[in-house]
Image (cartoon, rainbow over all chains, first blue to last red; front, top):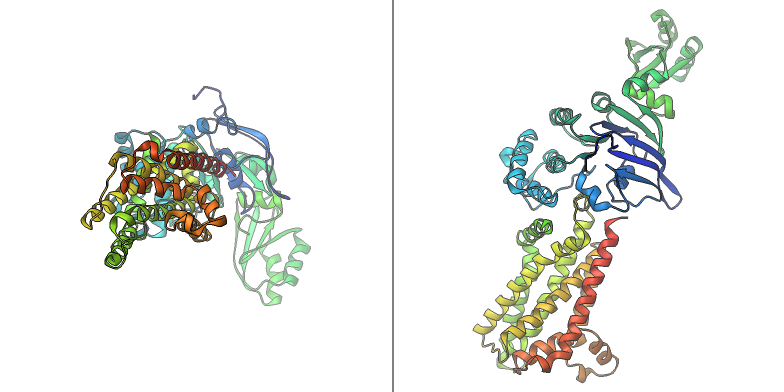
Length: 311
Length: 240
């Protein structure tokens, strides 16, 4: 099944329309075995729709895709043998306890009882749920349910794992634990991750597809994407109460000035503090801080789509 | 069998839900106890006459509960997760039906035990009664699967009311010959009156298989069609 040199995922001109709306537009994609591939994009970009097609939950309007050589339309059961998914929403059986939820998913994927128990123990420990594993999960907090929902995708130990916004809404500690688990799987499993969190994609992904309005607008390693946009450093100026007039004044000196939350970002080889003070102080605006930063994936996204990812 | 894992979960869902247990088991028993209390004033209200109709009423409640479980699941992210597992439509329908078949058996046994305490007599072959009720239970569960596959949760109670009325006025609780006209024609075309006639003929009249063969095959035909339709509609729900 897991042939050498066989791409884990191969999509050709994959397309999904809902009436007049094109959710996914002719996506070509190859994900190699063992690769951690991230799809980065805002809500409605088409990430979840793409994943749903690859998991045989949505019928493509056009194009084809294979998972380890199995066609998603003509061999759905073979595809489902190889994959597991953590959906964006919490997906658990409320009247079962954590053990029963994990055992159900393991059983549906044909895992034996002994192996399922072993994996469940490990996952419950990692997710910090061991102490309450015997309680009905409807008594769990939202965060606990979310962690169990992710564990349910991992218990079958799939060859291709789809994680749709896995850490959305989780506390930093749980997020860190899941990142560590995903990192430990890197190279052994093929993982497709969709995320809003730039730092998540940046830290974990081997390659990133930037998706906007159903199209892949850029594809590469995090470094390639960052290098691809600009070598010019970015200076962040934090200042409250910036007026249009003040920003226009800055733009007279530095052509690339972006307004961000709590200040502006200036893209220029050299930024002089007294130039900024000359623009802001006479207008009664205090500068709280200035610092230079590296190009981030947010800059990449802004550069490619003209909007910020967190909008 | 992978579907057994899901069947186990669905059984636990019923067993741990007081509402499901109430409508599928407690309500038919209560109905039998209340109605047979009128036995002293009217001979119609005796356990022997009432039991077959009440078992059918219990099956309608099973149908409703099965449809609710499937419909509620379908609206949840949990169902999407289930659909990504390597399980086919047949196994899914079996996994959602089997627990209700077990509840149907529990329900019928309970009704007959209580009925026996209240004077219920089975004059015919018990095995034949079980066979007829078993096929009828599958028919109603199949209808539940169809409704659960087709309808969202909100309009389900309307569909339940329609099937309940068809069961009652379709001859299960009313004498079709006394009603006559178009209702009689419709009632005879539906399986519910045939199911009741067959059960009652064996239980009360002591009839053998040849005497109820037409009624039985009528119910069996509907049962097979309901299973086929349940599979068809469920399969359509598996991929949008």
